[in-house]
Image (cartoon, rainbow, N blue to C red; front, top):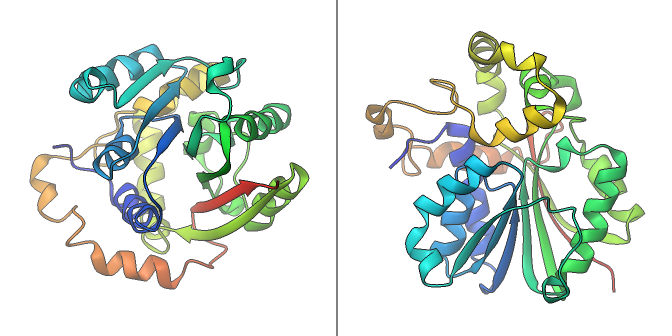
Amino acid sequence: MAVLPPGTLLQLMYLRERLKRINPGRFVEIGPGSGEITQLLLDLGWVGKSYDLEAVTVERLQIRFANEIRKGQYQPDNKDYLSQLKPSESKSADLLISCMVMEHLDDAAESSFMRQSSEILKSDGMMIGFVPGSPAHWGIEDDIAGHCRRYTRDKIKGLMTNNNWRVDHLAGLTFPVSNFLLPVSNFLVHRSEKSKLSLSTIERTKYSGRRNVKFKTHFPSLLGLILNRRVLWPLHLLQKLFRNSDRALVIYFESRPNS
């Protein structure tokens, strides 16, 4: 089993707690990356599909979730989520989940994302989103990943209001752990990935879901002794304590379209 970064583990721990409050149904996931959120959803009894622009990402998901695909529980799709929906996909999802995707969209695409999400969700469906927070912490990782923005809590609320959605829950995550580690993270990213700055924005976006930076995105298996949910539990409690901090580097939200 892969050893995950501390920030990723903290986000998954928070998401697990929130998902346990609702009954599992059908999900649509945008930007699945290596499939950690996908795995959590499937483990909790959800069924659904993922969209990703990068063919290699989808191929890896097909290998990882071969059993679930064969059983009809999951389907990864190498497709632009913002492209036209099939009629069968309209009002098909109980949950839409997007992790580190919306910040890649320009303003027009961001609005299209909201309209598409309104169309794909059932009348009582919900969106869960993770986006980078704290614009003051913009850095090389944002440039390399092809980000258009970092969000604030007010930016999320305004986006939802302007598109006739409501926000049910907002929380800043990974503070203060990710803030403490940020200088090291920036150094590792600059050393390993600065060459990506020459790529187009869309190419950087595609690569952002399958990055390979030692001690940033992947770790030696031995570090699994400390990078696990049990050891990081106190830090999870700490991130919940500081969930209203404007300095949190990740913003988590739950929202629904207004009737």
